[in-house]
Image 1 (tube, one colour):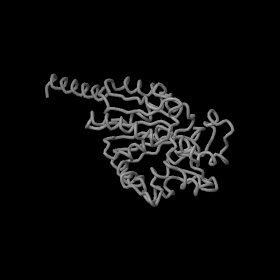
Image 2 (tube, rainbow, N blue to C red; image 1 turned 90 degrees about the horizontal axis):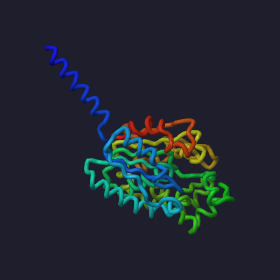
Image 3 (cartoon, rainbow, N blue to C red; image 1 turned 60 degrees about the vertical axis):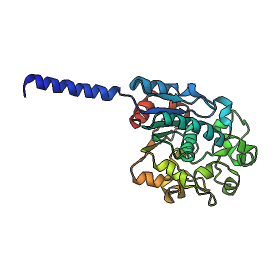
Length: 290
């Protein structure tokens, strides 16, 4: 091999490396959390654009601010139709990121619309197994405490709020199953309503990434971000030991067995920092987009 051939091969390899570093991702859809809006997710969208220019990014503007308290099914339907429209424009597939309540909305969209073409779904500190903590609610309900919150949330009025739709009181499970109109359904926990589409919509993913951490301070228990949850003694049961996993109700076990489920624990991050910390984006979001 002559000197010029070596140079050409070297330059070609450099080109491939640079192309790999700069190539765009599949389109990315981002869904914000409760009581915020698309502007709160700009660090994530800007970082994706910076590291992978020309990547199409759709930062959801629907249900910002107080309207984020609208019922979860209403949000799933409207944002879900947006996701399907974006999917139609990118038949090769898209990526989906949801933060906090937005991660639960995103997961429900995948289940409600199993014809989606989402490749990778990233849930960033989201109450996937429910919420039983009131710290973040005191802005709206200043006198609310966990022990009596069920009286509000398991009522007709309470179920007209997004938070009420995923309030999961471990000490009042009978009322949870009777009155909650959202979380028991998307978790396929209702015997008379077992929807196989809700499993299909998740198992078709290339990867599902669940991110959370012990210093979150808002998602309660924080393990809910990994589908772990309290029993009636307030002991946190790991996802793998809960019926939603063991019965493969929504496909978590299938994803896990196929090495398509990633569980990521990051200490030292408060709930308000997940989507505003560039290190989180670089280490735990960008590597899972393609």
